[in-house]
Length: 219
Image (tube, rainbow, N blue to C red; front, side, top):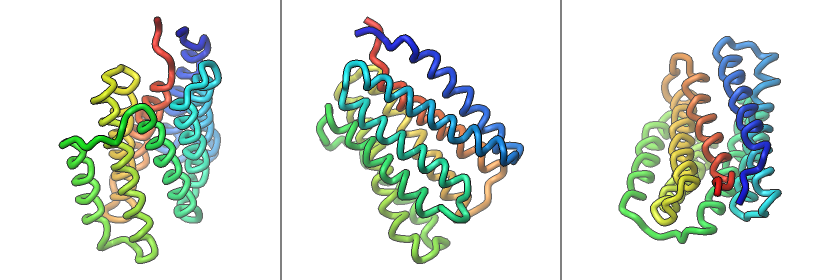
């Protein structure tokens, strides 16, 4: 199956826009944040969508749906003071879409390592819960459960399929967990130095790897 001819170009554009978004956050230059944060999400979405458009793979479609909700979440979280809950809801839908994608060609089979994902989520939530506002305790718990389930299923899928694309998705899901936990820790527990950079670098690594997992391998 041939690789889409423009996948390398789209990947390069996604990488460049992601780097520009991180740099814009690092220097707190709001006009560029409003440009490059959505732009990075658009290119990531297009990378997966183009991969789906050729062979019409359901996996790529569900990843595209997840990246579309990520785009919405990224836009909303430019102003977390006003739209944090809506952004959280958008990324909750992202994780549901990714979970569906990871489960389509790999059954939800229990593996011992799955416990590690949920243990990390429980530890992170336990650290956060004393400082969480009461209205957020339940939504954050649900979010943590779905995030860890998505990441665990990504690794289950790789353990079954053993393909490079499945490996990219599994590693991407781990980086997504790292980014979200850093974001939550900074927002609700202890302020981190250069928090936006620490959160965004693993976030963009995650999204790029997951988007690239839709690109058909060379044959």
